[in-house]
Length: 214
Ligand code: C5P
Image (tube, rainbow, N blue to C red; front, side, top):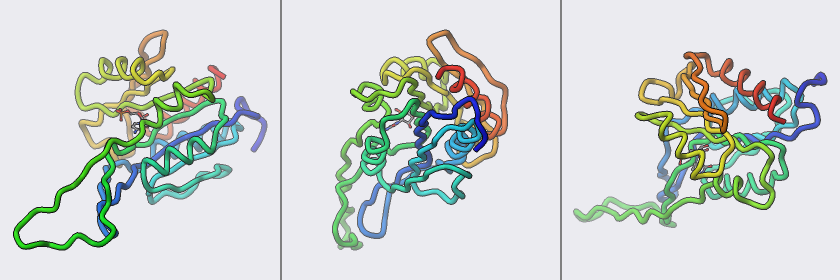
């Protein structure tokens, strides 16, 4: 790409949902489409960054010039992110499943009346691990999908996870899978409220702020 404001920087982006297998044919997932994360990967690449995009299962083309690593589960995503370090910035957009399942090795059969138990276990918090780890990128950005008290929850999340910024979005409407996003950027300096924008425009503005910060 042409020389840009992020030339020479390595930016790591996570995107999409994770799939947590229950047995060989079933999984737990969420409604993340990956579109906001892919748009961010594209926007930072357009500014010249070297981009590693760790993606859960999505139906999206790889943005031009982006190195994409496909994963399925949260554990795989955590490993891929660790392996991609060091980075100058980590933008964690993925909707990582909070819980994984101790998956059955064979397909669970409809039984004689009883319901199968699902043994849930906590998944690694990739963002918190990276933000508090020895190879912490200079800039760590998290996302917070909230349906209520959006800024309040995002501000608490910023502190709890050790992120520099949290991009809070209100997912009470049709954001997940949709084309537009209303976000609030929570930084140590305060909160910027952005108007409802196409996800590509959210991505471009964020890429600009990332370039400022690096
Ligand atoms: O705690 P919550 O899931 O709301 O946090 C969302 C932020 O944390 C997002 O940036 C998401 O990518 C990241 N996250 C993560 N690993 C998890 C859960 C969330 O990186 N296991």
